[in-house]
Length: 591
Image 1: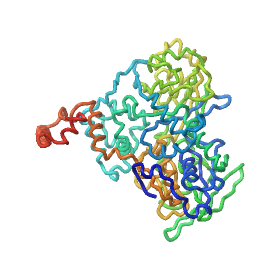
Image 2: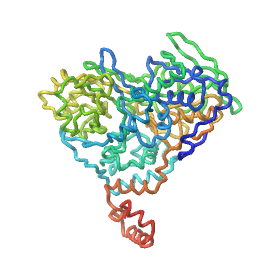
Image 3: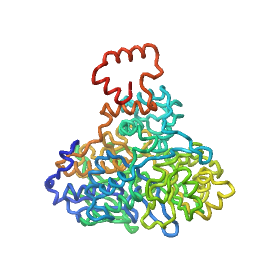
Image 4: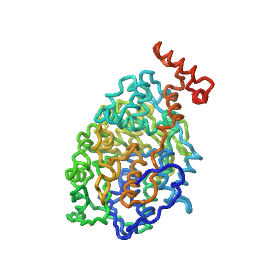
């Protein structure tokens, strides 16, 4: 496997890999990474679909990319996905996945056309005082000292950040700024999360710094992530004859490890309550989704809280990874991520409005007609003074193809599930759907004497607790996540958010798809380059633009510097006078 850039290989088709006719594949899990791996196996690996087996413990595919209407409960979206125009592996894949809505076009085509015609941007990023615009006004409001802390992190070697927390590299100059408000709520970072991951995110998305305050950096699908992304992939794979095996729990993968060679030899499963196993040869490729950010998630209802149940159970991603990791150090260290669910949980809720009574309060804040079929909030609206640090969003409506006309689906999440609410004086994790809706309505500015009635009769709210939703952000070091294909591996690879690949960042659709692509390309020795991570971190134009944007458009000549620093800058500007360097700096408003 090797990396490429540019369009020379982007449009090329690889030749059929040698010996692929004799190979089979077993894919553990059916999340985005697993489905992507299956797609690359049949598209680029040209493996017969009948030789590809997807083993899924649930009765439906998709993993964390969900979006379902549960009978007797209602619509549920545990989370949502924000996309970037430089998700190189993702768009490489979706150019080949046919739309399930429009004949003759790809998922990429429909996504591209939608976001061209209806570009994303927010008209209100945050509120205070029960629905008033917080007037962040597109500003980061970060001091020069805070900017220098971010710059220092940007240039700190990875190894100096192993096992460090964000609070080890940032102080209140950053943590009390609008920058951190935007960042932590958009990406679900907590102060105690990984400083290394924070650095990787800054470097990965340096080209989007200017688009963070108003979400112009983002793009969204038409419907929920399951219907817009997962279903087309399933239909594509079924067209190749790929075998989906639901209700199959994988409890362990056993390996033969000797003389530097590592081979998966057996998959232990539980199906229909019966223990069984699958014996493997070197021609049987195994793709392992280890860990899992939505493991142990629970749903509540309008009248019932979602239980906090972090106990790790047999047949889940964490238990399986622990058993695998015990066999070799190169298989990672799962307990670096799942040891403390109090540091990796947050809660979401799906609010289904049942009539038009709540809509005016929403419309007042988002400043758009929520029923237009176009962008509504343009991303999350963060309640700045919420004890739960509550955020909410309304994506294009309807979010489900069968969603009743005149109803809205609002996605809500709170980063602090253990803190008492501001209106409902209970921790979020102890609240029913109705109570979470009441807290939201309070912060939307609904008169207090109407809150309970509207939450009861004008909405149906389903809470969801996810104990490990940000486990991948926990502080870590090299080797804590296994490489996609560990050194010496001959017939297996790791997939998803807890596998290690260079330069890309977790909690993204791109990361999942990239691990699937790299795994398949490596094990089948596919003679085509995997698109490298977009190189904005090496582009001086993006670096200059981000520097100015972070300082809310101020030139470097206005920085609060000492006498010596000012003299150095003055002399440097004198030396570049009349050169292309001066022109470049002026073009990007640096000077």
